[in-house]
Structures are given as structure tokens and as C-alpha cells.
Image (cartoon, rainbow, N blue to C red; front, side, top):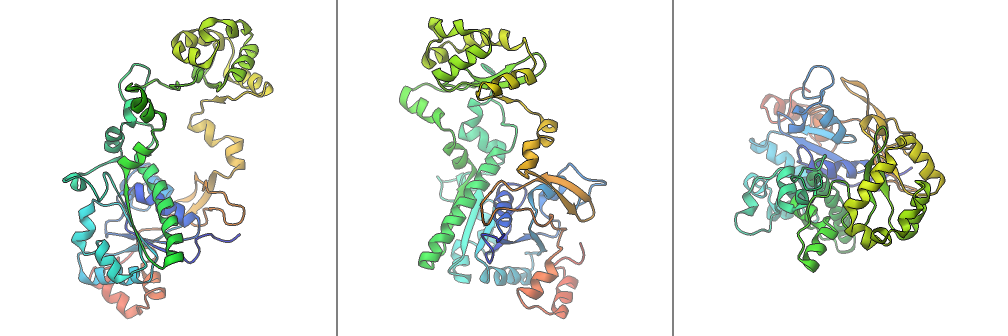
Length: 404
């Protein structure tokens, strides 16, 4: 199969998670992603878990986010390093980074400068609060948890009546990375039509606020300030996780017809005539009373038994899988969402596959994560036309890496 983004070159100056997530998906779709790293490497190379003795090439964290990419080490403290970067940008389609807004300007690679280097360049930046902000916000440092807290998403996450909780994955970074992919692809289409590049101003806070769905309109329409509800849905009941005899199961009955069928499965058809539970608005209003009744019923069987019964009845359900469960799940394997790679210095390793499934040009894991500076010489020779003498001189001067 072909690659949707074959021929698109991305200069990826990113680190850790937000922008690397974006460049990972672009690489899965066939873009040539050149990950430009400082001499010490992407910070993610220092994050565990490590495979064997910790070093810059054995980080499972880094490996999981950087498949299909090339690594070039450039020391941008040297003017020659900046020249190489300018030369790369001149022959590329996208520049991607997730520094604070002032960083690229200080380096001499702000949006105005990039347009002079390559008028058709698409420059995508991801940070906490964005570039175009109220005074002071553009210099505020932000991690994923800052974005989760500021955006409001933590205020609706956590146990019923309990304190706000961080979502169990770095969703602020990851959502921002996904949305940047959309922005870059849209910009590429626009450039195809007009020949003009664009600047993408991505903010983690924006990304999380944009996915708050009904929490926003519940406040703007009713004035109600949404609170954490555990696994429960604020507008549908039953629509949450319940404890069974041995573990947990999701029971999401999204309308009155499904509710009636569910009551039949649990042999409690009387509940459909209970005044407090007759309609979804009533069940939602009386969610806690309903939960007490259903918990007593669902604890009578184990999760597998309930799954079989609900499956046979054609009702929605899911066990609440842990990582062992889902990594051994046959459907995940059938969908090729857990793939094995041969990682240099590590050996065989299983990582998440690409979730972008297209009939002709699907996303694919076709190469492992690069060793630090693995492609420095190749990129300088094949893309920029540097000679081996040039490269040896740059190594001696500390502009590029000497070894990986």
C-alpha cells in the first residue's frame, strides 16, 4: 500500500509528548519526519521505563512515541548548526515544535523568519496557552497537568463527590498533538490550492476546553457547575461502571428501549415500572438510588457471565480492562493495535500500532524509533549535499553528534 503523506518533509524540533504525538501520526502516514534533537537528546529519552540499563536509546517512553522518524543532532548554539536548520527548513514542508512561544524567536526561527526562509512553510507550534494570548500567558510554562487543571477537565474527573483528579493519561498533550495533525493536514490542502504556508497556533488548554462537550453547555444553559461523577454520565442512566462478583463492568443503556431489555437480562423487569426509573430523565435524577439497586444485582454474577448475557441480548457493555487484559485482547491484536518492532540495542519490543486506518494509505509502523543522531550524516549528505569532509569538520566542532 502507498503512503498518504509520501513526499512531505517535516522538520520536527519537538520534545517529550505533545508535538511528538503529532509528528508520530504524520510519520505513520508516510511523511519524512526529521527529529532535530539537541546534543543531550529529546528529554523523553531520559524517561522510563527503560529496557535494560538506562541510556538515551533504551527509553520505552521515547521509543513508543518516535517510531518511523529520523534523528539528527544539531547544536543550535553554533551558527553552523542554525545554518543547517535553515537549509533543512528551506527544503521542507512543515516545521513542528512545542517550546514556549518566545523560544523560537530567540533562536531566530520565529514565524516571520521562517516565512523568509521558505514562503510555503507550514509552521506548527504547540504550547500551554498559545502564542496569541492575553499579556503574560505566552510566557507561562505549562505541563499536561497544568492544562488539565486550567481547562476545567479535572473539575469533572474523579469519584462521585470526591476531589478533582488527573485523567490517567496525559490527555492535554495528546489531544493537542492530534489537533495539530488536523491543522497541518488542512494547511497542506490550503497550500495545494493557494501556494501559501500557514502558522498553526496550538494550545493544550484550548484543546481540552474544546472536548468538554456537555459540561460547557450544562453550565452555559443551566448555570449548574458540573462536578465529578466517577464513571457515571451526567445525562444518561444507567451509564457507568458497576462492580460485579469478581471485577467491574460498564453498563451503558442509552435509551428507554435498551433499559427495558437490560432489566429483562438481570431479571428485574419490575424496574421498568418503578416511577423513579421509568424514563431516562427520571433515572438520571435518581441515579444514586438506581445505582444501589443495580449494584446489588450485578454482584450476583462475575463479569464474564454478565458479558455473555449482555452479548446474547445484543446490548452494549464492556469489561473494564486493565493493561494486561487489553494487551492480550484478541480484537486489539486483530486490529493490529499492538505491534512488534525490532528496536536497535533493545531487540523485539511491542508498542501501540497506528490507529489511522485508510483503505489505500493506512497509517503503519514501518520503522523503529531512531537512535540519538542516527541519521545526522544521511540527512546532511542526501538532502543537503554535504560532503564527508564537511561532516567530519562539523563533528569536530561539536555542531553535530560524533556518535550515537
